[in-house]
View 1 (cartoon, rainbow, N blue to C red):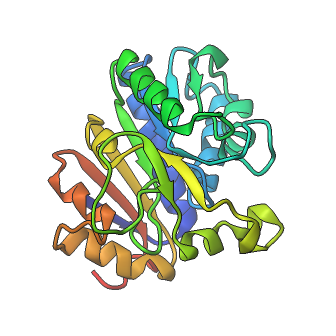
View 2 (view 1 turned 60 degrees about the vertical axis):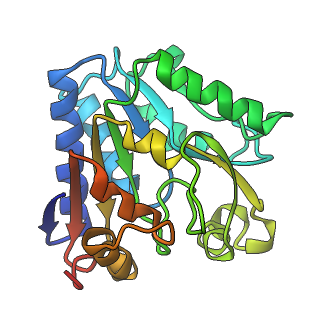
Length: 242
């Protein structure tokens, strides 16, 4: 892993946005994997500003959202699709025909996961996967457990993950769905490059375990050690245990 520590969260966001912008310049038809959550919000804000300034061009890029809540429609303000649209897509020049989301409201969630996996393959695979890092070491909604799914799949959310997402459901973790749809760890590891962003002291323990191992299903992010092209951007708070 290529690890860089920055002074502040805003510095991390600027560096991450510049890295994404540079990747787009090298390959205008870049296939991007996009996370939701609070960590990428300042990154997406920078990318919107860069788009307005003509510094980045998403018109030929393709995007795939990393995950979605089960039972929540794309148009629901609580969905990750809505979140990514609000914070990134709507403020850039993405061609909406190349913007892909998991359908959390699909009648057959397992079939929806298969459809999404096939769509990623049809697009040529992910060129750059952006990842946040859960406090319990999850990436996407791949939760710690005895086993990990390789492909896009349906997952049961841990109580900690449901608490971390309570703000999207009126602050009540009991209203957060018990299940989600997520790219699998194998899907993520097939990306040609991965950029991990972690900020805040609450992520410091997971960062340490992600970097120093061991590789274990009890910390899904530790599997990133097996990838040959992972960049990690941290603020000082997230790097305190390194």
